Image 1 (cartoon, protein in one colour):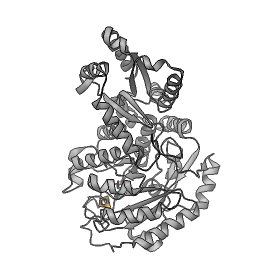
Image 2: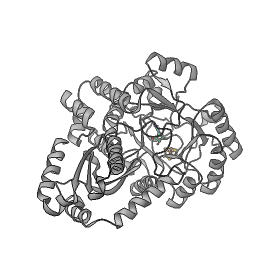
Image 3: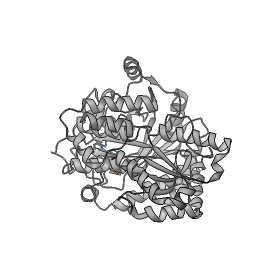
Image 4: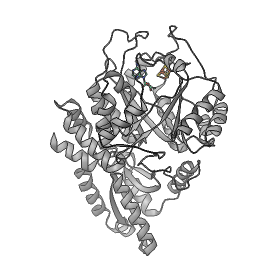
Length: 461
Ligand code: 5AD
Ligand code: SF4
């Protein structure tokens, strides 16, 4: 077990069997400790606070576990006005919050155009805006991105398709994935996550969830234990386990060292020490609720939702050697989004560049691609011309954290060498191993190239 944890700590890669072993081992302490160290190394001691505004509890969905489900008649519904939302956001900005999270049920009253107006108004201040409003079309997401929204949260909830369909009547798993891919493509910092403790959920499927976060290259991952709501079909079932939720979270940190991970309210609700335990097991974000008391009481996803007391939190953080960040806290604890072009549409442009490069491959890239596409080499999935942070890498096996770069002669200039060094440093800081080959190797020694890749893949198994 210690070997596995050490491997995860240095290589940030585990396969499904290894994840299952760590999810089910006797004692999680070593995993929590390793995740805490990786958190410190990659994103530091700062804790980012995100001001949460729950602006509407009206929802068209019928998720079996959630108190806001449309079929729950024992709940008073509300919708804040645009003015109230902006006013609350400005209060939060005045207070020093650098991120405003706008969360709601899937409320179609708030069209993308209407939300765009609200976002534009909030973005007149120096804050990042995160949306958590559920499934929409690509076009709607684009309107929201163009209005200046920076991030989007959409949990996959579970990657077990059967379970997903069971607990989300009428919903389409494929559409959920489509949404997440659209959000990534549009350049949102994209958050996802899962519930832990759904009746019928297996350890295997939790391992799949973690691998899914990595495959998506999520920028944020929120994990929470299920808390049973009496006015839902799950009434009478058991709550999820905090220990297991912390393990899923800690393993996610080990595999995705530079992402943002919240200590979730559900963890604190299950155990008054839940938030601090999470912050000491890989988490680096807290989301205080700024919704006014009246509305907050009605945003009852589950009962007895814990709150955050700012003074208490800052004292507790100090006592464990952590500080409150005054930055926007993008992925990797940077103060600007990871783009080639720091305009709001930058990341979108970036992905367009990747698409352009995919269409214009060199003969060597094409030869290499034809030999690895469709997982034909050692059953490993490679992606080509793939954006990682502000760089576009030639090829990457995300599950193995292995980047392959093909170089022509142009890489010999001192400027290029400096750029390559910085790029290598950045990719290493994100936990990737980088293999570089000359075009000449691809032309004349392709067997040698694949032998080297094969060894690197085995090393990272
Ligand atoms: N217990 C814990 N988390 C819940 N959520 C919804 N209902 C519950 C519950 N009963 C979570 C979902 C959703 C997020 C906003 O709240 O994962 O994505
Ligand atoms: Fe609606 Fe979200 Fe609750 Fe599902 S989890 S019912 S989408 S608020």
